[in-house]
Image (cartoon, rainbow over all chains, first blue to last red; front, side, top):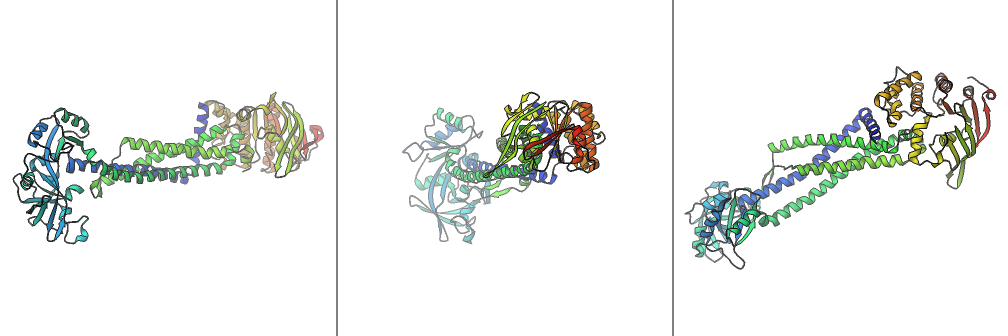
Length: 400
Length: 233
């Protein structure tokens, strides 16, 4: 068995070293490109997922979201609950808020964004929205009659430039009318405009919780509490901790809250990725198969001769498998090199998605999976043509 | 010793059956240098293919060194070819990417000989065929005669019971042909190598101990050295 492998390796080595270099280099290059293709697109999708996940945490939900109990509109005794949660180890910020619908009108442009009513200082400890003001200022605790809006909602005078219904280019300092869903209409001055690259934050409006409570006559209530924790990734554990501290409201993790949206995006990307992966692997199989098949057909007579002088068929097949493995190994190394160059290039010039710049995320499982896939197709593509050609009887092969 | 009894090889070509061998019986003793001659299509190469285990007879019996080769499976036939038979082809049939030395030691590698042993044995055999100074040359860098001598060295490397040669001089000029035939004669005389060689050249007769003449798939006549007659080109 060892001798057979030794002879097969010897034949493969000589064939590679003294065979047609042009075909060999081209095949290796193609396999390298296939390897890059197998990793690049999934890494971009992973990058998009990481970006959206981080945005969900930083601009929409924090780590945990507390909502009213079943059949209740509000969370009551919010101040007490907030203090209780803030004392829990691992919690770094708690932000009670109201989420509601409202109609905002500016110079005849009426839009109905989501309106968030927040305590600005609490909000700063949970979300990063406050740090993304590109014009004007963020809200202060004592603000009344002031509103901060996302840049998409502010919009442009030329409505063709807008991607959502907008206020037609409203700017800081200008006044808008907000009609709440209890029918109350008040005038607000635009205090700041946010550009966070997060679709949610950039399409909506923010007032202070105090202002909202004055409109609705509420006190010590909220319909959502966001919780920021020290670490991301142990949300389930923190949820249990909150429950053990007596939080009886519904507690969601950010993943659960954003699951539908994210799953839709990632699901669509994964379909594209699956198609790309299958096409890449088919290309790899076809290329290696054709190269080995042409090689074996070209050497049909030689294969017949080798069998005639007592070289077993399995040795000949193995020699072609070794060649396929060599092409795979060098192709993969070259693919790694290209991938490294592409990643460096993208680090310097990131791809900008609507949600922000995306850095490809290459994890070890992706590399292992891609390498194993390519190894498997290389083995198949090396074995099958060699098996077909060596199956032929000796005299037919020798006669060509 | 080779014993063949009523060997038949029938090829089906549509509705027509071609009887390439039609009941050949023969015996070849150890140390004999036997020529198989006949016109094109007489069945001489087919007979060599049967004796060389490159093809299976439709019917009949072949025994080589007491082994009924008809009972061997494919793997067994491959091992038998490797250990007991040496085969020389008309067109040298060397592996183009291997040097003379590598071509020769390939069969011995398969037998599990160490690299050092292979190198020593190859050097010895290549010297025997007069190519001691060409061991590192690729086939493409050698003449036809030299390539055929490498092929002979390859056939001999595992010390086969029988050396089978299928028109080994067909692609060579008379000078190189003579070199090859002299080599065969020397191997036969000095090493008592059993050789069965197919040829259609009349002047080759002088080298054979015995000649089997074939016609239409059967042995027409057999003549020994004294009866063969010599016509030198």
